[in-house]
Image 1: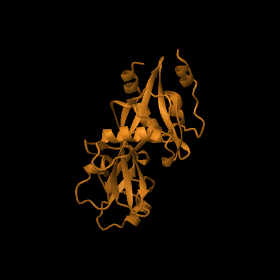
Image 2: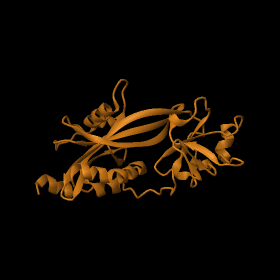
Image 3: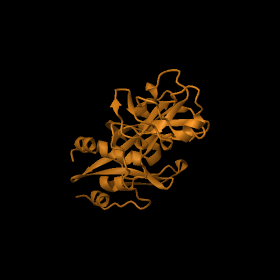
Image 4: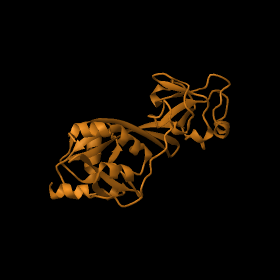
Length: 254
């Protein structure tokens, strides 16, 4: 075992820990955000914010992606999938749930129309004996993965590669394969940003890293997969790590 590998195996991540998030045991569990419309066109959003969505029969249809919402739908409500009851039916584009509680509505107080945002990021990994080391960053008080927003005219893969290079300070970086997407939302002025991050498995031969302090990054380090997962600051990323772990290990031959 090399000294570099030994150091990686012994890496521990100091900082806020992260317990395993509770996921709704339902068909929509892989979708972090869903999208709904107000069933009564004349119902004010303020009233929906107080009582949620409770149809008289048939349940509430919520769409799996913002792009699946029919044109002309207004307002569009952003729904936290983990706060929903188990769905009664599912199609390729939508699920149907008995009701949408007020606590599941993310963009109603005040109402901000959802706006899509595309981003790219990287699982910069290297194989260890029977394990995987993952590059992580410490930003805004939590452990995270390097990622950032797509520039106009830029492909999403090029975006992911550029953002990782900038945030961890490396030049040599190879994209191995795609690792799917995650989605999260946040208020952004008068709109509610719905950010879809496209993830890629990446490798670098470099061993020295420089955090991009302009982006609030204070530390860049490698940690064993399980250590990185335990300290990851966001439920969305912990859950995505669980989904892609087998793919990453297979691609790296561990």
